[in-house]
Length: 438
Image 1 (spheres, helix red, strand yellow):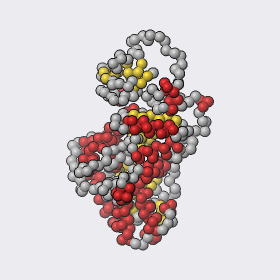
Image 2 (cartoon, one colour):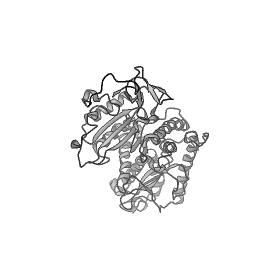
Image 3 (cartoon, helix red, strand yellow):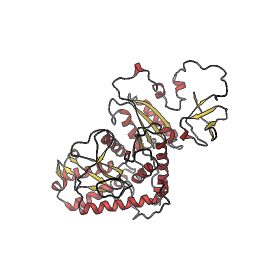
Image 4 (cartoon, rainbow, N blue to C red):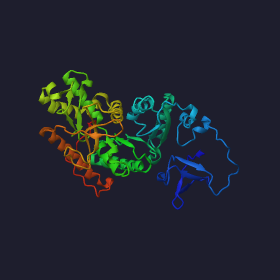
């Protein structure tokens, strides 16, 4: 089989597409059909009504020079793609397929190598990385694949790259959706919601069409809460509970600030919750947090600092980092994605919990339903989670939670055209910033 590197035209009546060479092209997924693709991932063969000039060889050689033409792998990974039974490491688990969007970006530049090394899923878990980029970033994406090649990770068994989510998300068991447009000068939050919302609506449809039915989705691209809502609404065949908006970096930042104030190492800080939206309305919860197992308010008695400076530092930490370094956080975001995955695949320590932006239907906190809201979660390590009951919410905490809730409800109205709920109507309470914005 050979990979066609030219435009392909769809014929609706036969669900096939034809190249100028008169060879018949069969897309790997019927959902991936496009009228014209710049870099189609298609498999070509002689049309069924045409007799081949000669019988094909019984065994197709797997020489490296031929392997690089395959659509489903990159470089050296094409050579190791079909391991014979004798070469498989019997102690390894079944291959896990991880799709990453925005794979040529800075966050992915840190994250992909953690995924490939075994740091995330474990030292006996082989991984297939399925990398999604854009037409503009495709050459850079090839560079990323080259670096992964050269790193010689034994657990990294497959790498595939592409620009079509219907191809890249095929059979994915984890989808880490990082790619999103940053907010430009003069852009209103409503505009950002619409531009990025369209990206995540399309990716939700692709996941619904071709991903594993139990795929776990972590949305990193901002505004991540509402992008996660858009994504899950466009993937009705995947449980809404499988979608997460990343607020783990905010939790990590909150733990850091509490540790600094208390004069302890951060591993002594536990039970920290980030409530609400990944914006400057987010609520770092010190009321339920603990230091050395004791309530934070018993260790840090400066109530004014907790209610004002602590909250503001966490909310604006990303902007402060940009001022110091000149660019937004990438490495720490990648670490927080790793933390978020680990929290779902390893049992939560007894009595502790973690933060994640999840679907609110059925929540025990009185938060509006049908939005994605960061709340305290715990897991048995099977990829699932449950919300933590019996959380203390006083009037101070409730007031702040309601403000973030109102923002997310307004954002939901703003993207109604992308969730199948009618015409959009934007009446955002205020133009709040994302944590990494100036």
